[in-house]
Image 1 (cartoon, one colour):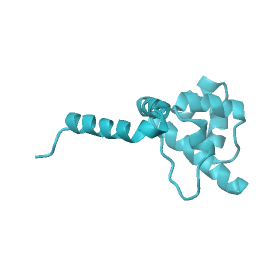
Image 2 (tube, helix red, strand yellow):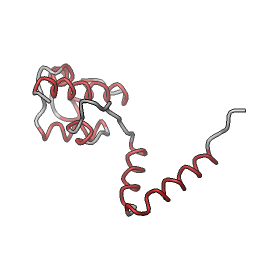
Image 3 (cartoon, helix red, strand yellow):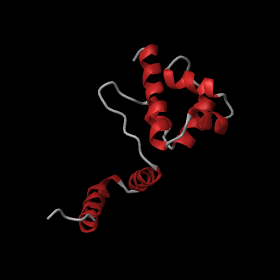
Amino acid sequence: MDKKDYGRRLANAIATQMRRKGITQEQLGNKIGVSQRTISDYASGKTAPSYDVMARMAGILEISLDQIYELKEDHAAVYLDKDESKLVDVFRQVPAEQRKDCLDAVVQVMSLLTPKDE
């Protein structure tokens, strides 16, 4: 991935997650200590934040740095909210040989909790 493509993906991830979280550029800037104009530059891809600033933004936007920095060209970005992220974290703690059984159990529980269309 070239630098221009990386910048475009980073800008898209920031802008998309801001929309999903309902956070304005001004609000995000105030929370991380930069101006609204700086956030605008990040969200448009004009400039890229430092790693420290990106880490603070990631925390506020509830997105992992992996989700931003590890985007692959052939995969769409998937953003997890706090509960979804917690579920993934818990699942990753399950030993690999038990994950299929764990996933099957979660699917069964979800089928009981999810209303059926009649």
